[in-house]
Image 1 (spheres, helix red, strand yellow):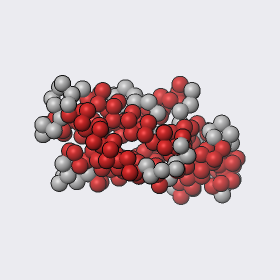
Image 2 (cartoon, one colour):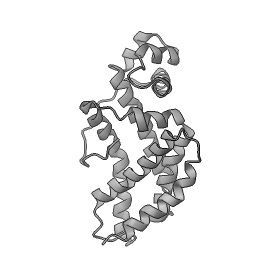
Image 3 (cartoon, helix red, strand yellow):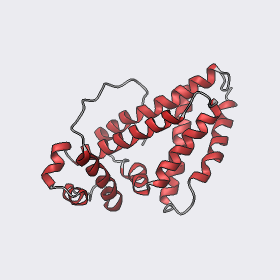
Length: 208
């Protein structure tokens, strides 16, 4: 995933959802993680989900739609969880630590999802990359809000460039997770939360 241009996107038309939709999403994560995106046939996803092949097409247009939908679903839930945990009594510094910790925690707890987000979502298909970037905007908006809050309470300098700061924050966390996946998830990813937090905020606060 790459940091995208930060503009407000159009509202996506809702699609059919329900228990089977969620079954298919979870099955797709497992199948794509185990077989790779290109080898993850719809028939394999249907078998893992315990549904007929034709049922898949009641919820998704094609395999690409499954991939983008699972990212949208997982990212949407993730952002909702972070927002629900960022209570008003937390400082900007504490909110950033929470963001980083929850990001690493979510992927450490679901290694299949980590493989999908860090490896299989990075397809060469330009249209697919654009869709993924569009979905990512919800996460980037949250980061932007924290940066703006930090400027208002003088935690961050007023001249801090939000766009560059977003790239720095997302890029750093993303690379930390990718390296963990490439090393076969053999160490405690969550233990890196505080070091990453310290390094990022040290750099952002010293911006001149």
